Image 1 (cartoon, rainbow, N blue to C red):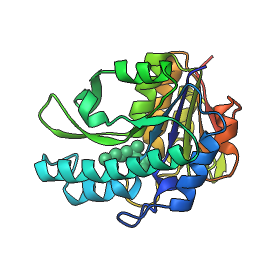
Image 2 (cartoon, rainbow, N blue to C red):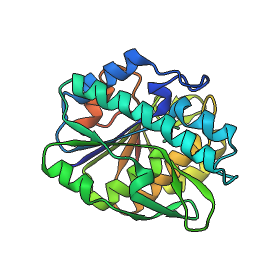
Image 3 (cartoon, rainbow, N blue to C red):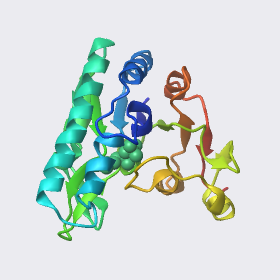
Length: 250
Ligand code: IPE
């Protein structure tokens, strides 16, 4: 049972301050993942390690070589912290940096060398990816969000469980989480959907939903849930629906 899990940067870091990891949360998340670590591809958000430097250098709107390097090294540092926490929790894992194995075109993944990820899964190693800067065939600087990675990987591996953990209880409509959402319903609730707190260069909740609705169109359902609530990550990994379920129009 292939499971693709994203843990948002808002859980792992304080998104309003640069380089502010939430170390206790990183440890808790790692311990929860360690309960069901098999066949999991983990993607984590960049949080303040990505959004703040990206914004500072004008990414993704401005092509800035230094900005690309600095932003990548910052998110790679957060990834190292996540990998270490997982290792301490007993999970065999390896970092996979999207910058080095995928290529975008117009901000969308055009090619992605997935073989190492598949090989890791076959060998009992959890691949750990993250939102990252990336090269784009159109010559523009670009950012690949963890949400886009989740959708691509889930499709490519035909995942059985797809879960995006954020710091809210799902897709909020007038402050309350919807139990399910389809593409048709999106237009009805769109204007009332909450954005993202802090600095966010990759689209917040709306960006997540659009990625997951595309996936639902292909028959792969997913969920957006609150990863800040203890126990939810473990439940999501078991395939239990927590938060909002993203479904295909029937
Ligand atoms: C953003 O990744 C990547 C960069 C800003 C470099 P995400 O969009 O997945 O990060 P979070 O979850 O919002 O923090």
